[in-house]
Length: 216
Image 1 (cartoon, rainbow, N blue to C red):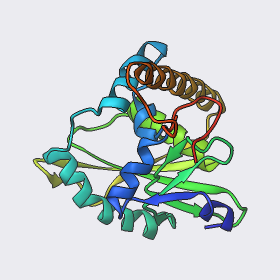
Image 2 (cartoon, one colour):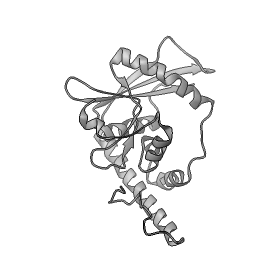
Image 3 (cartoon, rainbow, N blue to C red):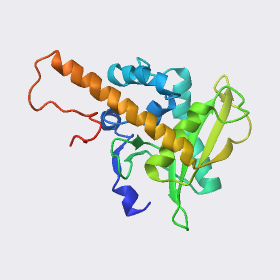
Image 4 (cartoon, rainbow, N blue to C red):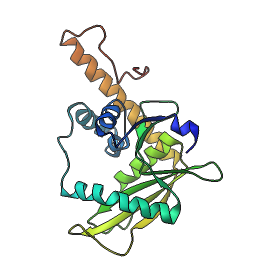
């Protein structure tokens, strides 16, 4: 990893408390996955401010268990090293992403990996996951991403090894997601300002979602 990328690390998911706190202060790939259109912004703002109420289930637990094994396979077959770092974008520091793998190739290109588990047979990568991939490429300036997925039947892996496919950087899709993320930040700012007018807030209250100024 280059010094420039290392300097953009905000937190590490191995320290879950710090990682969750850092993610709450920006727009992540998980947030962007739900941004299908302008109509989705209000619902995304609700989830960001109030939480989704989802804390995991047997499927997410299985994914966490299998991810390190799949990450080792990705490293062995494609040379993309596992990563647990949360990065911010070069310009907009509230744009955040935690890719499952990162490598800088011999040409200086940033290459990512994203790992999934599923109980369904994919004919193609689901659109919500593609939005996550494009967002990660935006945040890290990556050229392409290897999406690796492992199908399971009753939490027993199917097949001898994971399947994978490359997703190239798509500037059109990235620009669309950045626009929706900006609208989400604006919506969050409006809501937090509205809340402040209904309460007696100290002068030092932060404005973490202000559209044009980052909080420290």
